[in-house]
Amino acid sequence: MVSGRRAREADAVSMPDGGPPRRWARPLGLAARKRAYFIMMGTCLVLIVLAWTLIWRFSVTAAIVMSAVALVVPPLAAIVANSGPVNRQ
Image 1 (tube, helix red, strand yellow):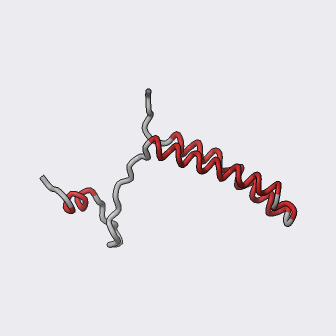
Image 2 (image 1 turned 135 degrees about the horizontal axis):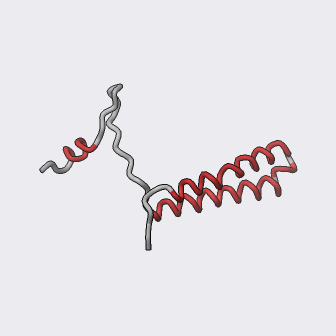
Image 3 (image 1 turned 30 degrees about the vertical axis):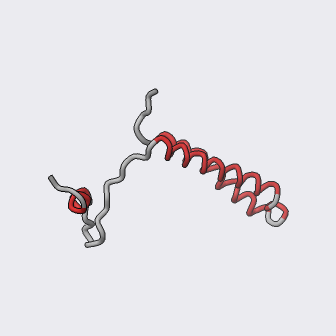
């Protein structure tokens, strides 16, 4: 039985270019996915509110760009929230 550092090295995959070993990614847990979802949706709300209450006074183009970025965030947040194992309760 391998333990400690050797076990971690055995789990890692070395890169073909001789770089540091890369670990296999594990799916995010439910709490991490919820946290990421709420952070992304909060960012979306902040972008929209800032764009049309403050930024539009200085640059309408910047406000439109911020709104376009905020438009892309909710689908990505849904993808992040739904990635991972199904949690049946």
